[in-house]
Length: 434
Image (cartoon, rainbow, N blue to C red; front, side, top):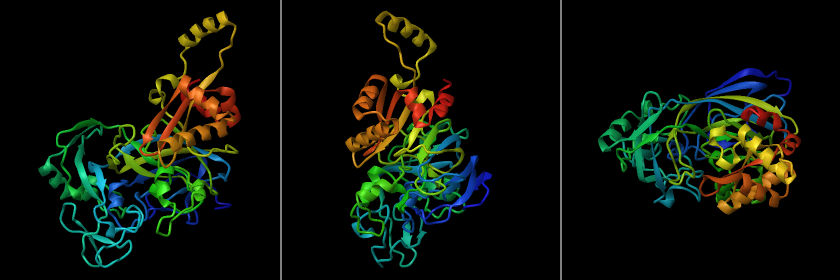
């Protein structure tokens, strides 16, 4: 989009077919400092039971950011995350029929009867056999919910409760309205499955973005733009197979980190001209780790503000969560604490360094690989040895699970001199009022 003047605001109401492909046109560009407003579609279950989609999500068409080039970073301030769905369904997944996919049920779905590859589908009734091949009428969903729930939200989108069988079937009969999926979304609403294994469970809502990031430099199924799901692509028997080395082209936009919510700042690597900011897979809530494999995927409206950070080279996402979301040891020291530390340090003749929090996202095929990846990304970005990073995380931070099997947050208080050389100190100071 060379020579195109960026817009102050770009509105997004279109979606990928489940594939993040850097060769495809982007929307925008949006101006450096501008705003992106997107109407997002539910992730996970809906796309998982929609064979024509090439990934496990249905994310928004990427938006180019004016001036962003490979080797830069884009800071994304999450201004608002608003749930529009009235209900959703979720639970543990199972793939009981391997004839319904080629190696990877998220990416390469096929009809077990006529053999059609990624065919369109129709819905017949409700229940887990409702998704049918449009060409031959056979049941086609590669996934079933082995234990799950249908959950409805209150008007204020603050609280939620799971339904019994009658309530789930009532919602399933009007699934399109309750899911509030955007007009241009092609996914089958998972509400038609009507799971009801956990009636009467209450919870709080705290929405966040499961997918938010920039476009990878090779085509990736959207759900596999991460180190853990990306590992499924190595040697895969379909057209989006990757080598181990090609996984480095990912940008880890699929994080499922529950602190990627309104008020946080996410700094993303730029690997293609324009960056290509995309989003999706909004979750109504999630406990750390997403241990069930899935949570409450919803439609919603997201507002972001973007800023290009020239020459800020990072291996993967860097997160500045809300202060209340930081681990206890990583929170900024208070004025009272610093005053007390001044006396203690003077007694021992040592100066106290100025520091501030930062969080590096690490991903890998398993938790150990993800931890190593996060530590190495911090080491590279801060010009600090991995051994020093490990000590700082232990003394003044924490490692937390974002998603099992392989997404972690490596968070610690870091010397401000290092953050300044990295090029992110102004953002950190603004985020934490330092």
